[in-house]
Length: 198
Image 1 (tube, rainbow, N blue to C red):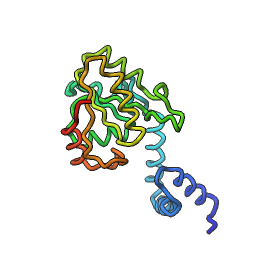
Image 2: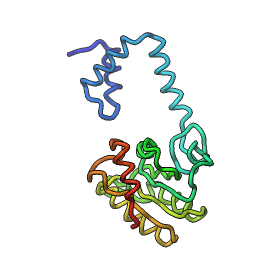
Image 3: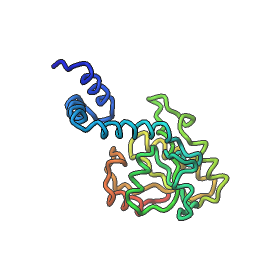
Image 4: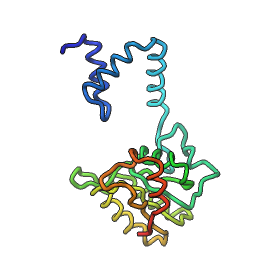
């Protein structure tokens, strides 16, 4: 079906979002056209504000409008405990459990030689600097149990052990090949509780 050009363009942009296929993009575009003008303007304004103001925390590399972020600057967080995640979406999944009270380190990806991503392409050096310069007691690897996640975990364990810190990994209450962001709070809580030292 041919759409009028403005509608086709809107559908095209929705399709660029992850997990949005042609039918969902069409539904979203048509829904947005039914919204009152002020809601569409507020939506567009919120997107622009987020894009312009959100940056990476200088400590943990979480997305935040402040640096250090809200988690790193909180006095209620255990600064001796670092949870290493691949992306901010994984940090958000763990935060939804309300169980973890330490701080984080966001790698910004995983080691994947097939995709040309090596240790220098993610924030490994920054993690090692944090562990070296702060009084860290434990590093929890909360990394997806995929081939890339396994490679990254093994590499980090090898680098972290000489620092004399406890290196643990969240328990495999998560199915192999799954993504942290899609796990429910109970599964993530149990995975954190059942972590083991590597």
